[in-house]
Length: 301
Image (cartoon, rainbow, N blue to C red; front, side, top):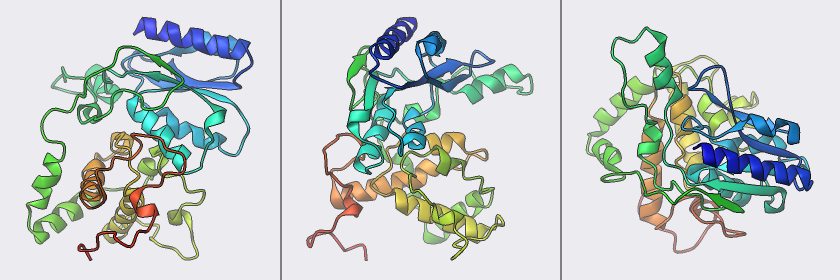
């Protein structure tokens, strides 16, 4: 990936020199080899810090939210799932296309820095030889869907086998079994909101879970409140989730959040599809649950 890094640096340098951008979003290497962190280059002097490697796992499109009210012209590097996040922001009117210079990189799949850390920590008895990020194994779009410049060779879809296999296994359980599974799973939630913060589709200016009047969920980490939080958030993501898997990746207690998201993705595809959020940008387009049609299916009521 050294050649990709060089190309990204050359593009960023040229954009700054031609005064076409005010900042450039990419990654830089942190203290450890397995740490590649989001980086905001603000001038030519910062360009040499830019890297792109197998640990450039963060979805950078989420970082654009902090600039949505500004006028900065921004260069940004995106992988396939990141580019779907760009489409999400454009369709949600959180950003305008003319402020962005998008450098797309065909993604061969990322490695999980947490797995690498565990291997090097000395605390793990069993070394994990497969550092591949779990979220990348379920990827359906490794190649950027929106870009101004495209780098790298087009990559095949990593997903092997049936896309919604885990969802169908969950659907096969009895109602009591499903409830027990989610009750046990969500009881571990500490309501840190890392999933919300990492999600590009969670772009409300004021989240209802930060409201105190009315207070939708309690401040304590009770199972009932945890369920309320995750169910409401999942429904807010319905037809909008881009399947980048960042919510599940950043969860400190390993809640399988994508299982919940994919159930709703599957249902939206069945009722309103074929539909996958963020795969194609069309100005003025809205996700299925953001518009009303008289012939909308209602047999689920």
